[in-house]
Length: 310
Image (cartoon, rainbow, N blue to C red; front, top):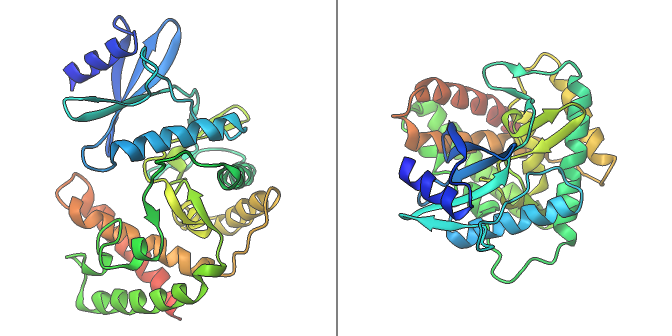
């Protein structure tokens, strides 16, 4: 990747910049330092998103930032273009945000004012949804869809969770029953639900805290979807927190301070979100730590699916 990074820095006029790898999961992210400023250079995972989808993401982030949503700012290269293709690798750059993540899977929430930050996160989520709804999207805008087909269809975005190879016969029956029931339920109510552009990954690692400021980062999973799916994503990762009920209340309260929100079907979307991770991990069983993550994902989903089916 060194050669691609160096080529990219030339395109952005940063040949003499210092750089280092800071993340290597779905994308490779490098921190670039030059002229007293910091930037995030992203080398995207091949085959995940089309060029059009990545350009759409950048256009959307620019619109969000221009309307007061706390997101990073895309940085154009010297020729004015935001996205470049180098040796078939999609490359773009954002400004570097100071601060630290709200927490992580390993440490939990890393902040003294836990409910205060969740209230603020709810407000930012609502502002993201509201700004996205009033925006006139440019021609050619495209992102994937966390719709009923994307969640429960024959080819869901994150693989067929009911076919995870580690499921027991009992779990396989549970997941199949959930898929059938949830699909029927969602088909009945989907026209009544709030639907539009969503972040789809507002977990603790993707919420940056700097003083009183809160930033939303990493739009890799973002696209069209049910707004309850956004809420469920944040809540799901905090189910084991001792003050989960207070965090949920604060998140919803913050959201409703900016925008009306019906949470009547939250149990359905908590179960749906849990199921997606069981699908996601299915093709990543050979990665470090995957066995433990898979066990955790299946256990979490088992409880939520059972609760939903009631």
